[in-house]
Length: 278
Image: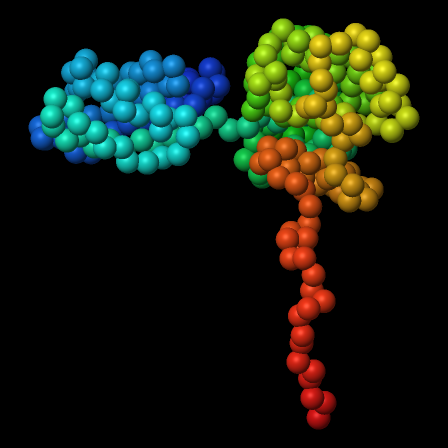
């Protein structure tokens, strides 16, 4: 069982610092007093201990578990320390992917709802207090009332961030996108947001991209999806939201987005027995 200080550090790492954390529990050690000892490990190797392990044992645990940490899967790790067999169990607490929905209109509501259902930490941002409130978005983790540029100037973004621009006017989508691209040009490509989707007609989007290519010559635009969503013929806000979230999941999970039926080359070779009519 975690003590209060370690539990608070665990929550702070995940929620505030947006860092994955592994809780390591010693499950096998010749000294029974050390069995059950707990440590918190982050990817940079810094950990918090409950004090039961020596400095040397802590270092050995770090060296033996960092490789497993990068894979992000809970597992048992076995190693030797001072010729003694040691076993630890690593339990991962991963930061959920973050979905930022800019705009609090009719399409944004089902997008936020489906996003929450599929495991995202959902943030809704709008500059109108009558729209940006918890009454309209009870499913969201946070609802922010702020000018879009101000919000995107300061928001923490990572490769685990997915952004959908669905504001009430195309000009707000464009200025939000421009601010995001300014932020991204300051960081390495692998640290950029995984997905920025912007709604709009093909003609209007084409004009926007011509402008962006002149302003952001170093950006390859591979993480920008516009017009937003998969082509499923969505018409209603709910249908459009499904197409948007399906595209986000496609990107997040690195899949094709094709129908699973396509994995079977053809049904034509299958022979069905004719039913005998009575």
